[in-house]
Image (cartoon, rainbow, N blue to C red; front, side):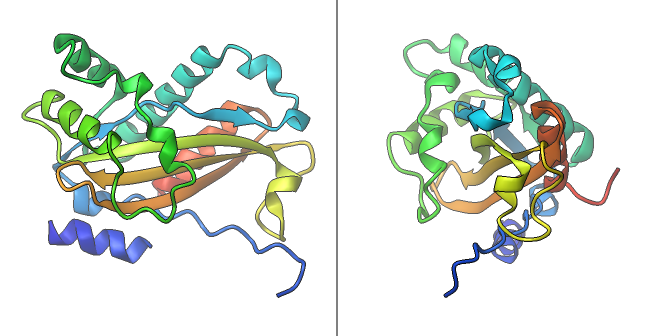
Length: 215
């Protein structure tokens, strides 16, 4: 596991706001040939000024579409990792009622503003460990948690030159955490950003920024 730890460690005034930190790429080399659970997204919000309400009005459908986009891109762009996607986690939970937590009702959103956390808090830590033991083939050691997805106006998200986009567009800000489900240690955290004229194009670009080097 030293390779994973090394990869994770490597990822880690005036009135003018500071530009956002660049997106750190997923440490897929350190996770190669490993099974990694991908938790479903539970927190998705958008600034009203974007006027994307019609596309995001059905909250459950929006969460499902975001999960689908993330899962498809992870599998296509990082096939060296065995990704266990939300649908499989839900099936594992249904096979063990009363034992496994519901993946859609876990407190993963606590990690959205938990940048100071080094270790997963309970009960999230024990829930992830239980779910990981039941999912996939032989259980997973790591979990990728999309802790929150926020859509902002491109101008507002920029804050400084080079961080935004054309006026009227939007920016997807996807907070991603990877944790060791056995120890609870959080080894990787980043905010992936992507621009688009609609939420799903912006999210595609954000996820692609997690796995750079390909079209």
